[in-house]
Length: 446
Ligand code: PFF
Ligand code: NA
Image (cartoon, rainbow, N blue to C red; front, side):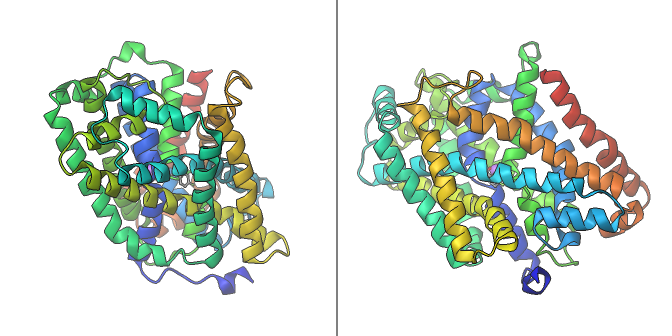
């Protein structure tokens, strides 16, 4: 059934755009910068870069490969492939935990998407014009302390996601990704340029790239790896699902490199834009999830043309967040569509509303439930921590182990266009380096 309905991507470009749309989002700008700030800077950044290259790249390739061979939703793909290779369907758990992760992540992702929407409006109304650090902090604290406003913005964002997925107009967004992504990069460059005028750019550079290895803890390493998985949309079945639409002609390794370079560049630019503002205004890098929402409005509120640039920036950020959020809802809907009698429309509504409800619990962590802690974490942090530091790496580990150890190695090498030394390198990285990396990080954080 699903094989017949599974059309393939019209072109390689469409696939790259969809994968980029999923990867580039709040993770690059909002989450990356606040994690760097929370984790003390450069050591985190460098470990993150190592994780992206040594663990992220092979796992991204592995997920696409599983999806392309399986041609179905992540769970069915793993089961079918495992059966074909005479293995237990226990591998299906890997697919299932990915879908669970996508569900949990979308709940708090939508809350932040709502913040981005709210700041888009704030830019239009000139709320940030001429504000100082105290002023923008007060605006942000005001938003956090208002559960009704947070719920409305979260609802607006989630409604957009549900509407787009239910209508199945995801494909229509690919064209937009092609033009809006470069626009986002240009705006980031403008912000980095502004950072250079603050007189604190050098400080920001040192903070991001001159590591104090003595301060590295297992916790920092785990956070860096979690960020690598989160930002590349790994360990969630999403890239597997995309792979299932992928034609045989697409070069997986080359495409993975392209997507990863773009994603990483945007994150680093975000850091270079945000930290000069932090240091110039005596803010704390460890501000937490509000970091971009107190720094960037300061820049926009005090530069010429800042109102229009701010509006464009938050619009583009919201758009990037939407394309990622859509990719998070997709696997949940796809699974429900194939496993239950629900239509696509009904599956999208049921899944979307369930995510929305959980999101409300997440946003109440910032106000009425801020004293409600489980294992020392509020609901928001718990959802984020459990997924990025635990579910994603475990699922990704399952995917790479499956491809490296359970699939026929010659056919994998052929599919990846590798021969000779390159094939050996792939074998080494996929069998040992990447899995050992994930396992070591887990062990070191205990
Ligand atoms: N990679 C996205 C980002 O960096 O914002 C977030 C995301 C999308 C995570 C899709 C996971 C996912 F499956
Ligand atoms: Na990302």
